[in-house]
Image 1 (tube, one colour):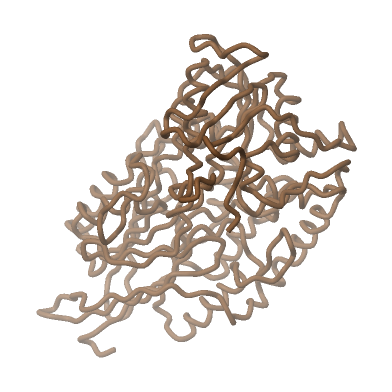
Image 2 (tube, rainbow, N blue to C red):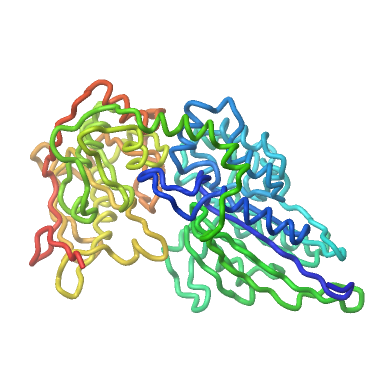
Length: 535
C-alpha cells in the first residue's frame, strides 16, 4: 500500500460454543471445526500482515462437554476459551446470550481473565446504566493512520431465555436503538475512517427482498440496523448459526455459522482524498477450516483438560433395559418415544408434579443404548437448562399445545412433515414440546391455531380457568421460542441444578431403567395417523 492507499483486514468468529479441538464429542470423529485450526489461520494471517484485526462475536464459553466439565469440575483454572484467545491476542470479544448460561460468576471470571476488551454497548448495570462489560466501542489505529471503530451490541432478548438469577441487576437495552445512538456518537465525536458494528444477533428479514424470515419479536434486528442506521460500513452478525454474506442497504452483512466451522474475512480498501480516507471497496468472504492444520500450542494447552473431560465422558452412569435409541427424530416427535418418556420421568421425579414438558432438542440426539455414559447424557442434553415449576391455567396449556402443533405441516401427499419455518433460516426443533401427565390429540389437517382437538387431565377435560402446576426448563418457562403464554406466570419453585446433573442423579437412584412409553398423545391428520415422509 502507498501512503495514498490503505487496507483494513478483519477476521472474526461467532458462536464457537466451546469447540476447540477438530473433533465431534458424540462420535470422537475428526471434523474441520474449532479454535485449534482457527488459531493457525490467525497466526499465519498476522505473520503476513500485523494490522489484521481479530474479533469474536459471542457465544464462546458454552456448548460442548468440554465446557460443561470445565464449569463443574475445573473452574479453578483458566477458562480454556479465554486462554486461547489471550494467546492469539485478539482485539475484542462480544457478549453472547449463551455467555450467561453458567451463571454470573463463570462469566465474570472469564471477563476478568481476558487480556482483550469485551464490548457490548447495551448490556448495562441496572443501577448505574453504564455498560457492564468493558467499553461500548473501541478504536483501532492501523498502518497509514487509518482509524477503525468497532462498536458491539447483543440481542436484548436474553431475559426471555435466561434464568433470572443469572442476569440479576443487568439491563439489556434495545440493541437497535443503542447501536443507533452509539454509531451517531462515534461518527460525530471520533470521526473514524471505518465503522464496524458487531452484533450478537441476526437478520430478521431477507437482506435482499426485505421479506420477514421469522416472527418479528426483536430477537434479531440486523436488517433494521442496516436499513435505518446511517454510518455502518460492515455489520458482523451471529446468533442464528447461519452462513450468510450479503449486502443490505449497501452494508456488507456476514455471518459464519457455528462451532468454528467457518470464519469471516473482510477486506476494506481505502484511498486518501484531500487528506481524508475514503472507502473504495469492501469485500467479505466466508472461509472454512478444511485442510488447515491445528495449532500445536493449542493442542498442548488443551491436553490435560481434554484428557480429564474424556475420562469423565466415558464414565458409565446407568443401564437401560429395552430400547431407548432414536433412529427417526420425526417419528420420536409424532409418537411417544421411550427416551422422551425418560426425560419426562426425570423431571416429574425431581419436581413432584405430574405435568411435565420437554423437547427432543435436535436431530442429532441418538437416545440411550444399553449402557449410558456421561457422554450420552451430555450429547443428548447439550444445554445447561435448569427446571422451573410454573402455575399455568388450562387456557395457557391449550395455547402452548397449539403453538407446538404449528411445528407440523402436511406435504402434497398429505403426510406429516416438519413446517419449513422450523427449518429455515435456523433449525428450531427444540421449539416443539411434548407433554406428560395430560392426554391430548393434535390434528395437523386443521388450520394452525385450531389443531388441538382434545385435552384431558386424569381422564377429565382440562378446565380453562383452573390452575395446574407444570415442570419445564427455564428457557421455555421464560417464554423462549415465542411461548408467550408462559411469560410472567407464577413460579412455584425453581430447581437450581442443570438437567445433565439431574439425569445423572436419577441414574444414581435408579441404576437400571426400564425403557417404556406412555402413549398419552396422538398426532394425526384426517387421512394419516402418525405417518411421516421419510424421503
